[in-house]
Image (cartoon, rainbow, N blue to C red):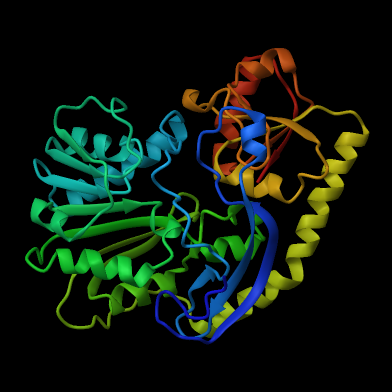
Length: 389
């Protein structure tokens, strides 16, 4: 299966530029045994660049697979660093759009952490929509959950704000999805949309191959995201980078006329083409450097662990599974403990495991957490060499 047309603008002017072979098709599903983990299917990834709108997507993404309803583990709320960020941006939205006492809705709510926090802070009502939501994860009486995909009827819920965090990158039919939401808001012109996604320009600039994995089929830059929202019938209110420039945030509302307002961070097609050319010349050097580093650690008999489960660890380990230099992946989310990484087979452990294991090296999957993780290690009396991505 190869997609010939851009899911955002329909153009067939697509240029392939980076391939990953045999990537596990899942990264967040909970897998209970090593045998089951190693049976997870693998497929190739080929990133394609749309020369018309600047969108980047996996041209080989298999849209026939159910990626959502089998259950997944994605909670990040166990990190103090992350919760400080999430609380800050929630309070900003509440003040900016006068959400006190209002109803807010989240598409792709996962386990409900964000909609729960937002509802507690704005003292209103919250609605979460996700076919994989697990009953019992949230006990806030002001929350209502729908275990289903978002559809047009959900517009009748009359939310003052619709949020969608780290979901759009999992959706292949991007224009179709944004158009569905727009149609559902035909009678709610004042509803605010808040989307947060990883941003591809950073990935290209630092050759962050660990942020490229199969479940992410759509990779947005500021320019390509803004162009999509305008074409789908929205006026963009704000467009900015957050969380050490790892995330891209867009705030918008329904519009009856095509918006012409542009933001300073929107790159041109030509600028993104140049960025891709630079990525192509540097990515092999990045991969080889890490391959050499892991081989050396293994040859010297060093115990190496990855700290940070989920998609980043899958993206990282996929490229070096043959080296087998890493036995465990650590994550503070207690719901991941004892599970195995899809397609890779390494087991998740809680941080307390490291006190006895005493690793020689720890690879931190997200440098944002370096200070928090280093503090935790030292409090356990563990002083490994630290590599932060």
